[in-house]
Image 1 (tube, helix red, strand yellow):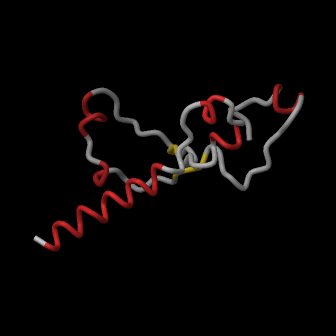
Image 2: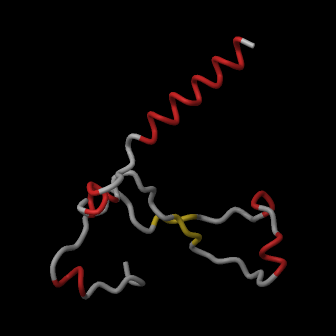
Length: 94
């Protein structure tokens, strides 16, 4: 009984702690792009897509995939472009 109560209390405290980092209300509406992206994870994608299509690709398990290299689309250490260079950047070119 004590262990389950301690586990429940730990879960409640940790949930409250992590929920405090999310923006809510007027602060979220008026937040800058940097503040909105502070807690987001970078997007990962596979460089070489799988040849499977349709139900076979959908039903394939993650652990059955052959080892493929992933790449980060937006990294935090990457220098972001500003101004006309950012406006005219082709997203498919690195």
